[in-house]
Image (cartoon, rainbow, N blue to C red; front, side):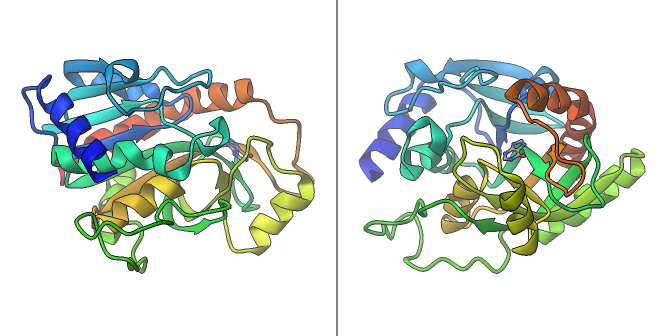
Length: 270
Ligand code: HPA
């Protein structure tokens, strides 16, 4: 795996002239942040050796290099999901590559279902912790010491300094933010009412099908992480209605502007 990571990073380095400081992974319906990036280079996933190719609607599949809020960034427009049939190692491969491109921090966005009864559709939630409910862990297998330790610490999965800066930025811009625990599971089914209840009782505030594998791998490599979720539907008793991917994308696109402001302003104060 190490050889693949290094050769993919070398391929990308041969195509770019900037040195990204921040990696960004954009979730479902949240690709619009790239409109704020002063783009220098775009590389489609298809062109990149060893990269999987994204299959789901609403994920266009490009690596975008440029400047955002005065920082050099690499953004993944479209991510890989476990439910597409990739292994968790494949899902997280781009995070490994971004580390070798030199990123010092990882920003992640996603759409999720809110299970906290105080949440509303369209809310933003800063993720302050997670529960790995995927059937596996991306670090299963022989550990590569050059990447990180066999038994990585997970006492601060989401960087506290970044969280407090983000809350300040949200407040200064008059944007309401929730904060809470994200439970990641495989999908592709949305949850049954009993499963939403279980997720809440397990201690989570929101549930989705991404982010946890990428953050585990980033923390393995000691990259500080910041993640935000858009609550696109509610898994709260009495408020559960039919969920569709279209509705998730629609709500995400509507709430995206608020998230974009926070991400961009946060870049400026790093
Ligand atoms: N469950 C899981 N994933 C999701 C949801 C949900 O309710 N909404 C958006 N992604």
